[in-house]
Length: 223
Image 1: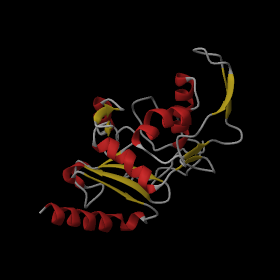
Image 2 (image 1 turned 60 degrees about the vertical axis):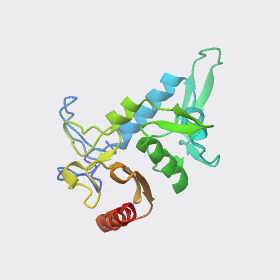
Image 3 (image 1 turned 180 degrees about the vertical axis):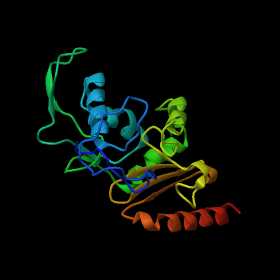
């Protein structure tokens, strides 16, 4: 129940109930709600899929190839330990299932520079240049799918916020893609100007003004 009827700053749907209260379960594919419990469930599913701690997978396949800081931390909760069976030559192990969101003391601790590196990976459609050659870390088709609007929530993609009609994030282009975190943390991927912008701890009420000013600056630079 903890995240039912949750309302976040960029969700345009009206509030229809009290957060954390019971509501009738809906048929899959007929209802959309921003919900961190489900993203934590996804994280647990990925842990079982890989059969390895997700921070190791994240570091090996994304962070190190991108040149991210070794100081990035991704931690779970005291009660989120999982027993994984022996697999692929690895012994059975007890590992922490890390949350998909950052709440209640768990989640990812990351610098704005490393957030920008992840945003640049999206801008470059999953590719990074290393040692003079281009390496595809994530299939470009997957990056494209992340930016496709959902049927029930056209302002939301695959864990990304979108800007259809430039109405959801006024000041940014319609092609913009946002990664949004609690506390006013934004990674703004702006293909129109080949730019990635990170802003942290901004009041969402002031975000449109910030977006407009940055866009004006980018337009001035591009001539």
